[in-house]
Image 1 (cartoon, helix red, strand yellow):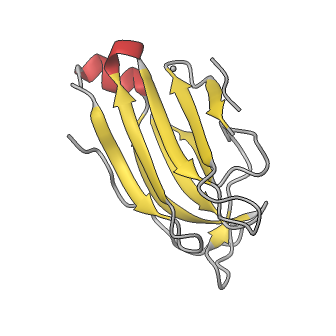
Image 2 (cartoon, rainbow, N blue to C red):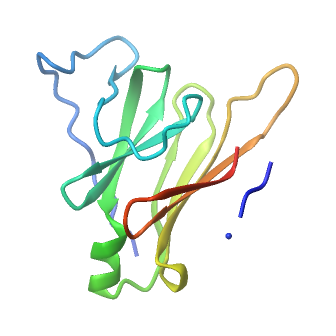
Length: 140
């Protein structure tokens, strides 16, 4: 379905804590400030103090931290020229996720694919994060 159109990556700490215990597949997903509320999203984004934190979703509550990038406001203020900010491979599906800044639209575009099933392969999942952290899902 279709709706509506220099690297800053850094590792997200993956330390165990009482509130976010480590499990065999990864960690518990954060529960606050989730930007894309689509429950079946293969990648999820969270707003964190001027940054956007990205996770590969393994289930509704578990994930693997991918990395973080400055939010759209910070990139705009810095005059970032645009381009790919982050690239990672989902540990279970092997699908690539890319996070790209589009300065002409003042947005970050996130592209990946759902895991393949017996009935479909390479189903695109794309969403955009605007400067106010509003999310527009483009393909799902």
